[in-house]
Length: 280
Length: 280
Image 1 (cartoon, one colour):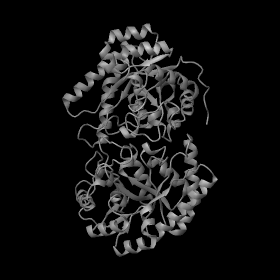
Image 2: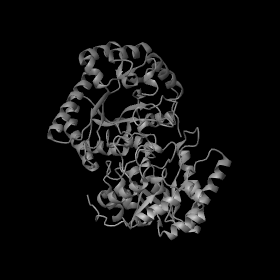
Image 3: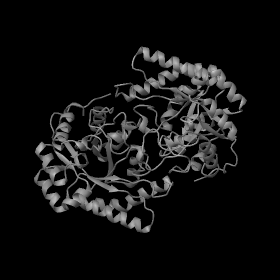
Image 4: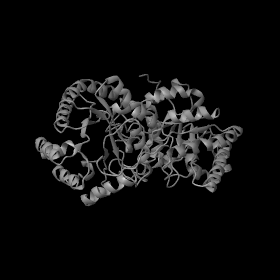
């Protein structure tokens, strides 16, 4: 096992707005994260829409925050022709938003099975078809697409790409301008993680998301832990992505109905900063 | 996609006693399953202990039920030397019970991280070390060991072997007398499932467990669905194991605090039988 050098400042810390989404709207989050002196932010699109894209872009720029990613494009598999058109339109808008915000990537949560379907292979094919349509447009807009393999417990309803291996297979078939977002929560259990991170290399490692896996996990979606409160050896995984050439931001993304969404957001950000120096 | 021939009788249907564990003790389950005319049973060890091994063996034999597996050995990773000794002793007892019951395999739930540990690679190594100690004893007792890759959401606390690929890598390093239990609930999401089932082949396909993945899944452990109520294409997966040579029993194993454990067990068994003819 090789551990990376400890983190000594907050310049490479980014906070995903999901982490404080219950407490702060996007405007408040931009102010709060900037006040705390972290280096980056990753906004969700519903919050961008609420604030207004131009206003959000201006505020983020003035706050001197790097946009480590925009959450999210994807949700590709469609049930009918009309759904396919709406999905492509929505993703085109996401690409435009990511370009306007000068985001380091547009995170793709690729979607699960269409309603009523059990055809997993069919869903996989739809994901690749949608990517083949959208990738040239993303390239033209200068927006790298980052497939985020989600934990297999989300395969049915959120993302049918669940391993780095599968995500990178898709990337290789698709060509340039697409890579992966590595979220420790989703991939920490995978015996192939180290080798697939190495395979991805600097070019395809577009984002690194951190939080922790709690034992027990009380809810499939909204019981993610603060770094250090669970079982993931985050420094080990950070070492792997950095050895592979990643030098982007470490983005904290915590969905926590039961704990962190109930706390003072200033305290949440403070603890993110503290933990990033000690357990990341 | 290739689908297998439909099932037309209940001779190859087995029921895992977890499916009715809240309603029936082992003695009642043996009677109930035999009365329903299913071909097999898979008892849990706590229920065997409660009934008494000799008495259970006699009752199962008299009921003419095939024991498709004994649940469960494993829980290998240890925290200290004393824990290691206790773990090996417990697994030796499990092997003896499986031999006495003439079980087709002893199912191994390999265990997660030792308490307080984040060393996943260390846990993997402990799993292989324990298997290397126990496999010769299992071979001598005539008991095939079946590693059950559990869903990755159990990696921390139940089983750090979460894919067919990893399980089969372990089997190949261990040699003869060990294989896998394929539970559709745990592996349905895996893009490598078909190829790994083929790789396993008849020799290493020791058990096939069925239930369904519900959307939404409300609890990580006890919200498994009855076949047909979720998103898994069970006939497709049955086709894959049968093409690879598997001709054992189709074992229903449903943990369902929220639904099936609350129902009349006669009804549960009846519905298992009906569904096995229509959606398995």
